[in-house]
Image 1 (cartoon, rainbow, N blue to C red):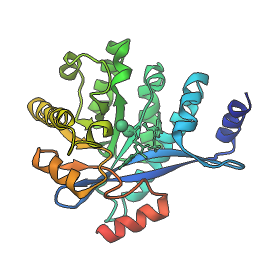
Image 2: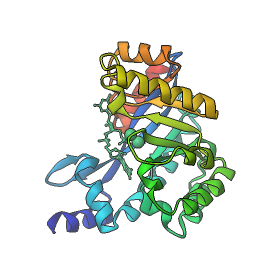
Image 3: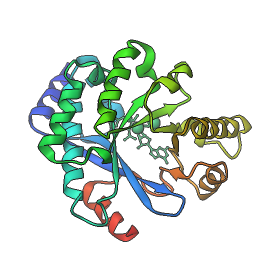
Length: 254
Ligand code: G
Ligand code: G
Ligand code: MN
Ligand code: NA
């Protein structure tokens, strides 16, 4: 199809870029960002990931795209390391299950870290629960290898998948990410409030940190804070920003 050919061209012509969404601690400090890919298409303009990630997954192009994203994020980490207002930030990168199951996945990340000079302690990989549907042993093995280098792991969209809770004690995770579907109505839907609180308690019990995504209002932030979730990401703080705007945001935070 046309769009598949376009996607291939886009990779060759380097039409992808990263936006950065701040992650804010309850003391108001920015502690990290999530890197979110966009496609600067010559005709269609700026294309959101929902319009091309599924196709990239179907066609296997996600492997090339994922490599580009990792490399771009690590270059950015290395560049920020010399700038006081940016040096302490972690960068969270979304990885797809296909990337993870590549035999050379661990070697590749280690190579990217080495070549870019990024501090692996500042890199966080976001996994989704749906990744845990098959061949979990392969994922666990690779996570331990990367963990040994200092790389962190966050479980994205937590609570929306079907994974067994028993994985939580097998995976070397650092963080659970409360899915935005639970945050949206957390003030009005008692079930969502209970689920959010339960995820916070689960994270605490397992010695993991927790972050809420999709936080759009101060009232949501306050509820989450009172519930023990001290890290938040969402439009209340900032939408995902292009690099120049993000760096300006960081200067203002500093
Ligand atoms: O940026 P936005 O909020 O539109 O992201 C929509 C979805 O696209 C999110 O679920 C996110 O996980 C996914 N996504 C964004 N960037 C990447 C990426 O670099 N790799 C993968 N695999 N998914 C991404
Ligand atoms: O990786 P993941 O699929 O969870 O990506 C997060 C998605 O949520 C991105 O598409 C991002 O643009 C979006 N997002 C980030 N903050 C908010 C928010 O406050 N509200 C809503 N509705 N979406 C958000
Ligand atoms: Mn994510
Ligand atoms: Na998510």
